[in-house]
Image: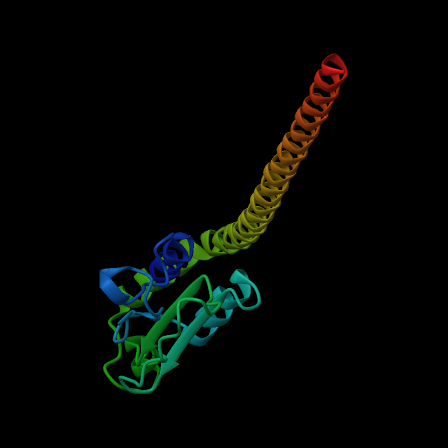
Length: 201
């Protein structure tokens, strides 16, 4: 089941996950929905433990794995402006694994399969621990990236506001300068008129 965890980790880090439905006018900003992953009837041991490990590695609210007994129902898509987990996967009938059936006395696996499963588990134990640390690191980096984007947007909005204020200020200064020019012209005309009157006398 290390392979399943690796797939989930890849989805966690994928920029296009969770997927979106087409929006209006053919845009890609429609409702967000969980990706369906059919991995039942495999040799996944301790599927409940796998769910707990992945969810705890991702952090609170960052991972949501939806397991159902049957084929559904799948979680309802949410609007694009709603917050969603970084990893949102629908796992129907995830508990139906061949290993679980063997433990219940149904179709016991052959010894070769058991030994291969044990070797596989031993080989991937350290990998799972490493992946858990990497998922936590990735989550922190995503959070930092989101924070940086928000701060950048705020800076851009502030810069835009400041630029608008400067433009308005310059416009007001130009208007005042025009008024001063008009006043100077009026004053010149008055002086010229007065001088003419004096010369006429």
